[in-house]
Length: 570
Image (cartoon, rainbow, N blue to C red):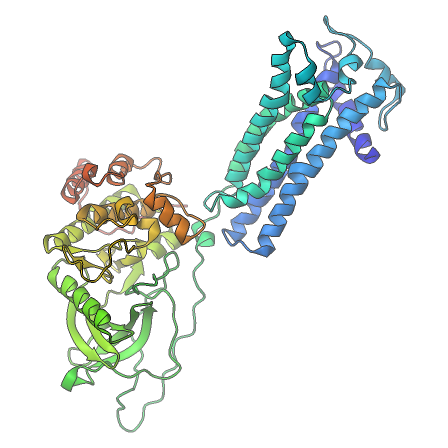
């Protein structure tokens, strides 16, 4: 501790000489407050360090990251500040007792006996050993308010500011890691109440404004990029193509000649339904069998798997009869529930005739059940587009919203609800046109035989409040999910922010948590706020949304249709 006292003594002495001599209330008083400002750099350094590290690690929290972050919080938020505050208090107590503290000269101690303005000598009030808590209980009534301010208000405000620094250091991620930084500081603030009252009050008086400035510095560090927060999975080598045999085998796999779609990173397939685009690549060890189609069992040849989930798997296949690529969704089991679900999805897709909705071609028999043969859209998911290229511009977002609103309205006209609209279920093709895919949990309005009451369907981050509590889905809930997807395209985050787990996301949806991650400067913020309201009856309908967006585009002499790939430069 004597080493810390010596270091703090030199700092105080240097700060005292930077004050104009004779300035009220005295050089040592000003130096003590300035010393508090210097000590504010300790938790600030911890927050800045964590923010810098997170630019590389993102939200990958494990023992390798959580333990160092916790150590930074304890050292820079509690141990070092407490040692520094204690050293200043001990220094003045030693000087008041007639001892020359380490790091100071006799002349320095003698100068503490000077008085300025109408105040007593500085050593008389700086060297008092009365603790902050004792000051509150023993101070006369007229001075008790000031004692309360020094004891409670200044430390509490400083704690709030340090908490802001911690939240800024961990922004664009869950909030719980921020506690690793500010909880140790809260312990230090409590322990500081046992220090010398006047000295601690001056230190906190200098600490608070410096900590406020520190919030700006933490923000200037920047936030982790979307590529760090949602890294793309490593690409696996393409499947090995077996050499051609003398005769064509029923299980032969021919390589695809067209460019393969890039895997999506931000939204993995749900456990309920696989998306039509590849979220991961798992080439089979051996060429897979063809999808039987009655007498035409050789018609569809599987090439590779595009995705899989609890419901089944989706394969890229070649239709040898028509010479085109198709996507084939195959159920895992042949029980009646899966059969009905497959037929329901096929009917839902077949009923919708819109250029921006995936089309169904056929339903065929497979060894494990039914398989849906549908349009294969070559492109990339909206989630990957935003992750790799950046957020969409207002113009691109307007075109995305109005185009998909038209596609969704066409589905609603046929009595079909999608119920799982999210960024990974929107595919942008090579021309920049968006397509709504994966009607895996879609159903006709009024069809209640296949989903139990209260069963949650959909992805929690993009789930409307009413469906999160088990209320039947409606066109208004589909419109909410579409607005949430557009908000993601403008910000790179779900509208309610990211949560620690799927369950916490579901609870946030069920409690209609406010949408705090909406775009701040977008021209569509007002329409997003209305479309993401908690009351379904108060939300604008899809027709109103289209009308508003088309009117906004027309004011800028822009077409309502066009590519949605224009992105904000980073």
